[in-house]
Image (cartoon, rainbow, N blue to C red; front, top):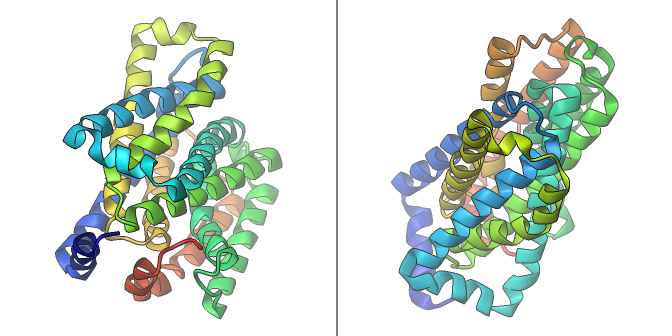
Length: 320
């Protein structure tokens, strides 16, 4: 990274207004993502796999085209021209593919509200584990207490969420989705804090993730895509929630570390829960509600240390 680039990123980190703007970008992105599970239920005849594939393909093409058109694609060429970035791009693309597919399958099996809460609610914990595995952060007593509470909350969801259709396989897929999301967020954060353009990072990751999903889409029923409502749903999921949402998220990562960003995305299950109960008439039993409350309270504990260490983590946010 050049001295000028380093100075520019240091200035961005030190500016309170830029930090607030980055957090606002992440929150807006999370709000958009919170609508995906509910919107997906209105795609009659669409399988979870075709929904995930069409969303990533449309969003990936949009983000890649945007990156190619920004300054003549200079940022994209620089990103892909650095060999040390290529393994991270590949890892991030795989994480996106798994995250999206597992999420939609989980939402179909265990309900939109619960599937979204477990997926995004688990991401901060998984981000902490990734930090430990890569020696980027140490686990504190506060973190371990919050993790234990969140695991207990998930156990209550599995044991007492039958009223909402909660079942173990769906919870497992949601946790896999949360882990994959944490990997994607960490990879994107590392690339952006290295000095790569946020548009280039988003375009490269989602453009690469779209490739293996093309044959998936071709093997799934696609009749829903050629209907009026199906086309609108696919465009909304691809252009708005994927293209727009992840562009906002990437821009937010310029001044927000991955740990803080994944905590801020807890706005997503809040939006999904409201939409799921209001529009889809989803209901949670007493034990499941207690599990959700415990999960939410435990994850809120992570907010304080994440914000307190945000500058330190963001400055040292590198994989070795």
